[in-house]
Length: 179
Image (cartoon, rainbow, N blue to C red):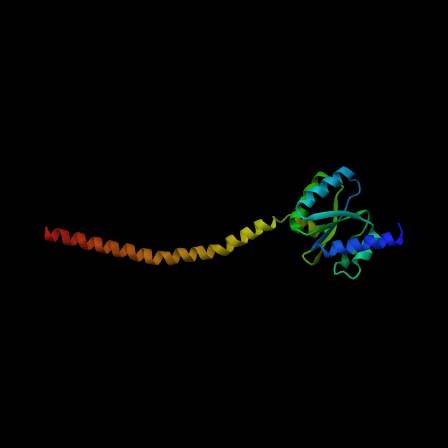
């Protein structure tokens, strides 16, 4: 590869880094071209773009980037997944793919402005999708408010029921006296 071509590849990698929030590194040794294409299609639906890179060129692209510590995980053949969507959803899909294809190996990643090791990525992949977590949060936050509304509604309701019972009792007491 000529110097100009290498510079162009580094520029493209830097552009991809700038356009993605999160980056996940994987080993792919042993995967067929068909399997890698299958992974690419699955991740593309979730906002992930898989690119097989030369380690030296990717190291150059990482220079002057806050994600430079990712270079520590560049061992063996490496595929980089640039994530513009939900990183947890992408990791869930990668984990499911890795269960069916043992050749796919998570190496490390940069998620939510933090460096993650392989083990941390595996744990992160076990989380439910973002929408489900947000739904759970809303349920937890709204429960005390619902209880408060119930308590506040109970006071006037109980007062009305008490007044109705007193009025009924007085009406019954007055009816036999007049009869």
